[in-house]
Every structure is written in structure tokens, then in C-alpha cells.
Image 1 (cartoon, rainbow, N blue to C red):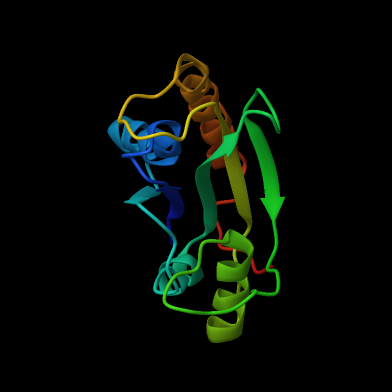
Image 2 (image 1 turned 60 degrees about the vertical axis):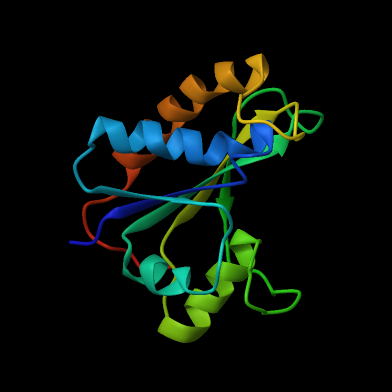
Length: 153
């Protein structure tokens, strides 16, 4: 049985942009059964192999707070990549690559953590710190909702 793959990504040296990695590290510390975490500064095409083997995928990333002040959970689907280069920063494009290379794309969500600051620094803003707990609860709920058998999308 494949694991649920949680990918927390962002630049930890740009304040709240480190929210994705921070949440993924918290999830990892919980040692949830059947959950595997990756902490990355950015998404790259090489992740397609890991995604193809997963039962489900949850991306965790910071989103500017002007878009939403609460954690948002979005169901993702493969989208046309703007261009495939050595770095793929769009989860939808990465899912499209996974589908093209491996013929499958697992159920995938984005947990978007509100962020107020993207300046140099390693501390999360109070807004983002408060949202980390909410993100963890959303991820737990998503993990509980994923069937134990791998499903094709």
C-alpha cells in the first residue's frame, strides 16, 4: 500500500514562505501511520516519481494573506504546464507531468497557509504561526478521508 505523501515547500529564509516546510515538519513529528513527508525549498520534476507511487498527495505552501486569512484546502488536478524546465513551481503542472510519465495521478490537495511577510528572516509572522495549527487539523482530516486502497484519478 502506498503512503499519503505530504510535500511542504517554500523558502525558509523568507519568513512566512517557510510555512509549508514548517507544517510538514510538524506532521512528520506526529508519525502518522501511512504518511510520508518531504520538506523542500521548491518543486522539481523529479517529484513526479514519488507522486505517482502515492495513494494521495497533499501540498502545503504559503499564500499571501490578502487572498485569504484562513487556511484554504483546494482539490487539485493536472494543468497544462507553462514550460517544463529544471524547476516546476506549480503543483498542477507537476501533476500533469506525473500523469504524462506514469499514466496516473493520485487525489491531490493544496493546503494553503496564509502568509503576511516574505522578507528575509526565519521567523513566521503571528498570522502564519496561528494558521499552522489549523493546517495540521486540515491535513489530519484529509489523511483520514483517503481510502486505504490506491485510487486512480
